[in-house]
Length: 586
Image (cartoon, rainbow, N blue to C red):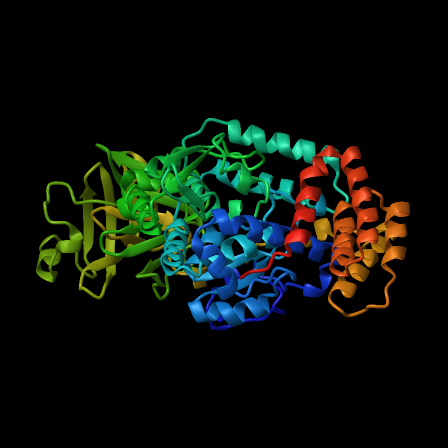
């Protein structure tokens, strides 16, 4: 993590494994072309969205300090966001979904500081500052929506992924980096797109993360609000896309009432969405989210929860009924009559209670995994966790006593009890046993040569979730920046073009009125005849200076571009209309 960034109290409280994704915004790296791209999209969006977006959008632009003419700075945004209880950080493009949601749970808005290339001005699958800053930031000024976003992050961060989710994340991240490179490798992009499509077309059971990611897409990114017949936009993907914000309002896009069924509806980030979901109000979003949370392993636990942890092949946590938490990579579960009776992790594992690591039971103690039975002793209705000290003594579960325990499902434990650990409620949560052998039927699960056996106590698994219980006990700093993959030296033509954009910008902002606009136009015609956005910016200067003859000459050049590149036609027409309207936020 690069610590050279503007912080505030909310950011200061973030755990280290989230801070690793934060990077300085490096505002000075934005070129005049980047600024012009931001300005065009914002002017176009504000002009159109004030008619079709939820009222919170235009109000939020004012509250969050998002300007039309300048790419926002994190420092400026944070000074204003703190008044509504949020903060913003710049990150390195795509970050893992769980990390993204965990930021939200901390009331921190994640903003990819990169900006789309001019060629992708209408839409980019890569996260960029237009999408994050102009899409996500304004709408969180609405308190009901802001709480939904925070709660979504809190629940989503605990969603369990599977191996395919990790593969899709890496493939999409690679594709976005390639697409937004200044000199894109078309063959590499084609190969990356094929990889993404191949992974998305694989038919596997949707993980919790895949399902909650669908909910995120159809609400936070592409949500509509109101009624099916009269909907308005609130999703950031629509708010930041000048193409899709218009497309979604047509009858070609099917509008559906938002329900939990949206969790099973996938999406393709490379194409316009054929259907969208409409929530009647922001409160309804939270209702559906709670319905979804009730289906998750964090609330259901059990055998299915452990199986989800195993399928994830990633760090996860299992919580037993006594409150003891086991964090590690789960590899096996033994079941009996539909119930989990024994689990096993591999590699570094830690034990915790109420998200605090138990003293002496961190990864140093369990570098090679941890296993323990779950359930009741055979033929005894009273679970160990519910036994009083007198009960424990009656069953010989007592310090310095040799014990032979048989759990339901044929799990046998034989050894000498050293001591027990209790929770705050007085329930025993862990028993240390020496000279211990653990068996399932004839299979040895633990032998005396492995040292002292620690038996976690719990009659059932009540919760299973992604990540670890206590972050302090694990080294989670693994992120590698993608910035170097995109940084390429600019050629002379690029530098010359940026200089022309800067001259036009300086003239408009009154920083340098000595620039010859006619000379700039000659350079455009001679060296950059296809630069429609620069030409529109110059057209604006001519119109605002009431130089109608010059404006007419520029307009003719724009018509020539439209003839050569019909795909730019609507962008040019919209740009000219914006100049005529002189759009501002009222």
